[in-house]
Image (cartoon, rainbow, N blue to C red; front, side, top):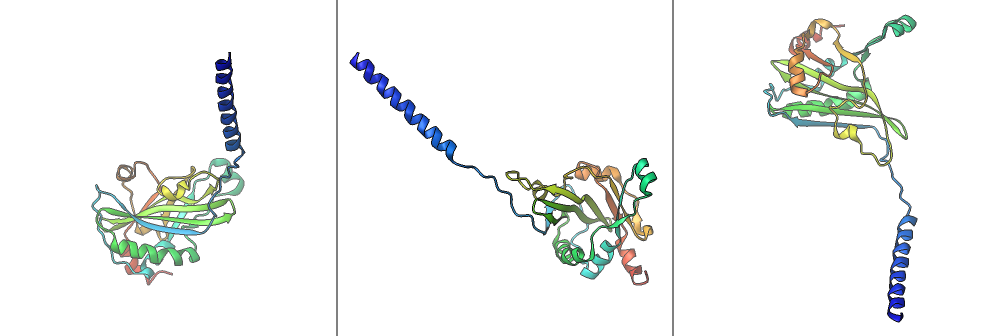
Length: 224
């Protein structure tokens, strides 16, 4: 009986030790923190091994600013919205302060880009302590045409503690459904899209715009 009692005592002490360790572990508070919401601009070259782009391209900051100022985002309105509020007016892709920050970085990137690299951009604007709006997409030059692909336009991203910033790591992915098209003002410099080619490159059909940018720039000095 003595040996049995000793064995029970040892087992009891092991149980108590395990319970103490469990209680100690449970008493540790876990706090998931979210990174601060800040304005941010990221531009990077992304490898595209199947591509044959006409790059690098020597564009001046003034020229690219002239082009991007003319890009418009046109949201699709359903029939009820058209009745209640009328047609939705197109809006500029980027406002003037954002253009001033984005254009120099984009120009530097496209001047260095190789024939198998597209330029991906990510623009985040702080809308509060737990929210940012992101505009993301890509641009490249092919067949002497400038193609702009837009995946997000001021798309809302809620910052949730413990979740990764997926919009930064996957800028060519829509963070939430949006329904819009891209247009250029004046429209005669926009070239008909090859939708099958866009799907083949991006694996989806994001809104895109293809421009005869050299012809536009030649006439840009004469535009109002």
